[in-house]
Image 1: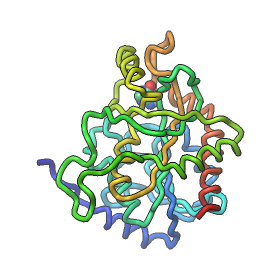
Image 2: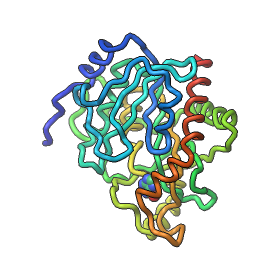
Image 3: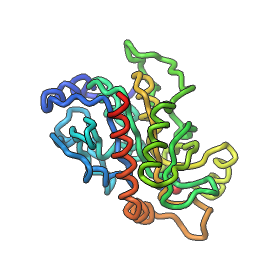
Length: 277
Ligand code: HPA
């Protein structure tokens, strides 16, 4: 049996409540392609993950490891810049710790963002895709392990990605002046990219995009009763779709090129969210 976490999400949430009086109901986890959102944020407080008990120290370049409380437009939000990935070697318990902290803090709606490889042949580099459903191909499940008292054991994932929040994303896309794709996100553990044969297989399974995050957080969030939405930045066409090889540098370069669109989408989403609650 693996060792359990030294910290409890409730302890981490209590720390956050002590540091800041703002109580947003919306949280956003920023992945590659979305970090520019921070330039739109009027932050009341910035807290390094190192100062939140139980939070991981991200090891990937481009993921800072900071939590912000502030406003996007008029809407109070909690923003996480940087996440723990399974491929970094963290246990799923650690990968989902921040999500559980958000629930303990009082967040009720969670927007997950990520970079992904485009499998759907209509997709182009720099497109954004609203996640309608997922395929968990990570080889494990974040709810595996000792049951958590007070939370369901066998979590229903029929409606993982909330219809209302998805609707807000599409409206935000319109306001931002670009068309959002929609599709199914398949999660792998990484960190290697996929082989062309795997991508052909994933296409047959019905996947539109592939990435290495989001699904653990979405599943843990659903267990905690949060409404979830997710959006992917298609930073590259998946392996074998192009003649070239894949690289993290390419992922970062596309993320940089479309950073203004990603930030506008998230800001407009937050503004619409604020108007409907
Ligand atoms: N595969 C998996 N994860 C990714 C990719 C990819 O092509 N691009 C960005 N994240």
